[in-house]
Length: 316
Image (cartoon, rainbow, N blue to C red; front, side):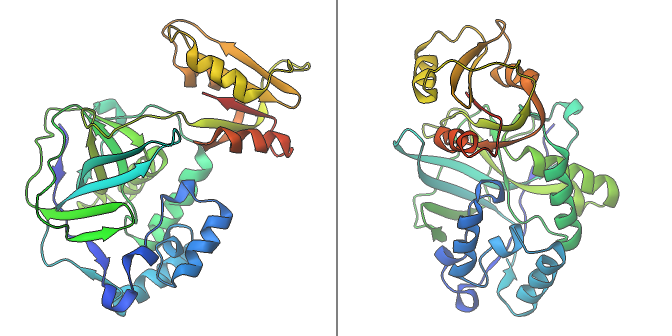
């Protein structure tokens, strides 16, 4: 049974910190080094100073100073937050997605309350755990899906707005007690929260912030996340001279009755095919050795191979 409850948010006071547009940032793991520098330059209080700090110790010092100086202030009471997000996907189509920001009790996967769909890597989890130990606060929510009615957005003006996001404080929430939750984004942070709770064993450490979105929401879309591998188990030999984006286009038009992925190495691309009922990600994992990087942009994965920083890109 999922335990979803309201929480007392700690949030920016714009009178001290400045406008929200200068303070917000995407999730830490999609920010490039160049984007990190640009976000840091927007404001000394941009959240990227905490989520991608120079060091965990510096993040802890900044977090404490921001609370002391009134940059971050606690809400008067607990509550949920209804969330509306406008976004443009990799296909260039503009959409709006609705969700609920809430506090979720973390549960081991074997209890089948929260389900994963990908494997995680030790390095990112160790880094997030060091940061969580230092700051002792959850700095950003993860994104989960549930089967059930979409979140209803209030008709009144939003309480907070930044970029394409709007938030409404609310006391109402769907009933999540009988549903399974699927992690759409945030596997490393979820497993870090589990590890942190194993160490702390407090009621506070048992919860983390999440955004819950219905699978029936009209604005929900699922796009591929491509893999960039420094090392692979692919057999040696030259790859065919097929262009990777052309191969990916052909894969998109092919029947979806089995696992398949385009693998691009120096010189060209080929299409890997798996078994019926096998997940695309399972097919890729057979050929990947060591840790991988992720990107929603096929061009970025291809560029990593062309630059020599990766042996192969797996395009899904």
